[in-house]
Image 1 (cartoon, rainbow, N blue to C red):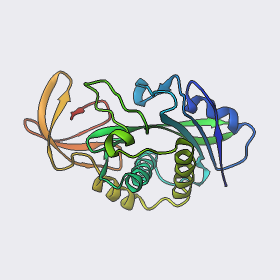
Image 2 (cartoon, rainbow, N blue to C red):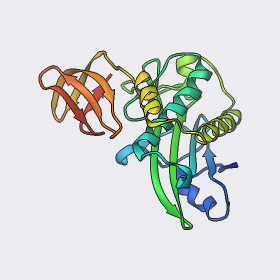
Image 3 (cartoon, helix red, strand yellow):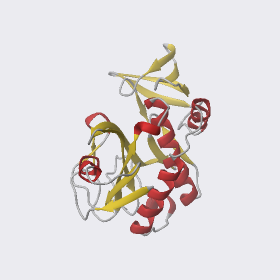
Image 4 (cartoon, rainbow, N blue to C red):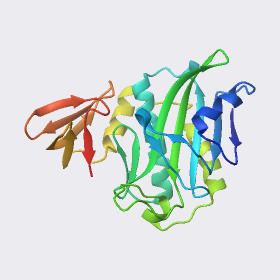
Length: 238
């Protein structure tokens, strides 16, 4: 069973979801708004969205039936979001390690997954910010939206409901670790292509080879050879 709630405005759906978990009994509880004022991204980054143009959505998933590791769960969540958008956009959609979603070279989705204990239950709190109808972004930004990248106009309410239904259903049956890893690497942005990376203050050419079950990405660097990195240890410039 899954439920979806709506707030006209909120600071962060990841923060507000806990209020709904205190009174509802469900393995999948979703909360969405089209006006999030203080969205958070990975590792303290800020996720800024234009009001009434985009979707801020959080799904709380009870961990009692989740048997895979946190890393595999994160990967599979990114796969689900990628698949949903690929169907809608009818275009190539990629996952920028570890879990940004890229459509035609532009980031259209940011995902933030946290674990929280609320009302004696443990939850994965999956926060997803999706740029849907926004048309203008900073000139130097790598961000885009479904509208800018496909020309398609989507109804926000319908999008939110369909997205919630799809994600909840897909999370009921998580494939094996090997299958998830294979799907993730199959859709990995810039995999096996020469790219420019920033490591500290140094820039270096390299090729993404694969992501592994420990949450690391393996990159074959021009000067340093094959190395593994955790998130924030290296930056892909694109």
